[in-house]
Image 1: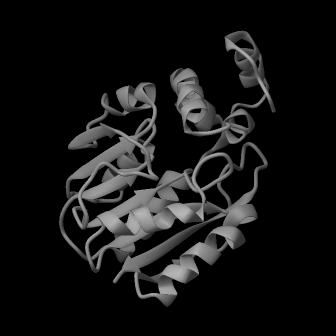
Image 2: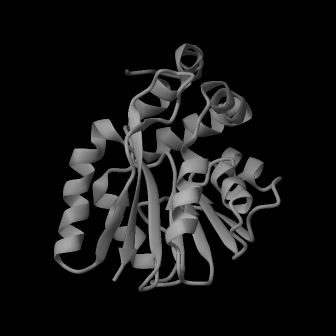
Length: 215
C-alpha cells in the first residue's frame, strides 16, 4: 500500500500493524515502521497470543549441541531472548535488529550479552562466529526471503543449529532456497514442525518452526 509522509503512515498503522509492516517497501521503510511500532509492539503481540518465540526457543534448545554465543537475528524487543532463557538456555545471547527503537526495548531485558544494530541480510559478525542462531518473525512478507539463508549459515559454526519461524504461505518459496543449500552441503534439514496458528488471537496464517544444522 503506497504511503506518503508521516500522517499517512500513522493512519495506516491504526488499521492492522502487522499488515502495515508486511507492506514495507525496502529495509529503510521497514526499520522506520518498526521504530514507530516499538512502543506498543509487545502489547499487540500479547493480545494476538504470539507463540513464535516460545515455539522457536523450545525447538532450538532441543537441537542445539554446540556451546557458545547464539545470535537472535531480528531480535526486535527481545521476546525470543526471554523465551530462550525461560527454556533453560544459559549460553551468551547476541541480538541484532535494524530498528533502533526495538533494540532499545530489548536492552531493558536481562537476556542479551550484546545488542547490535544491523540487517539480517548483512550480519555485522565474522564468519563462523556464532554457535547457533534463532530468528522469529523475520522470514516473512516484506522482510527477508529465502535468499537470506546463506547469510545465516555464514556466521554459524559447523554443527550449530539454525531455528526460524516460517509462515506457511511463504514456506514453499523459501524452502527452495534452503534446499539448494542442502544440495551443496552448507546445511542439513533437521525438523519442520506441524503447522500451527502462531497468532491465535489474530486468526493469522499457519506457521512452522524449521531447524537446520550447519555443515
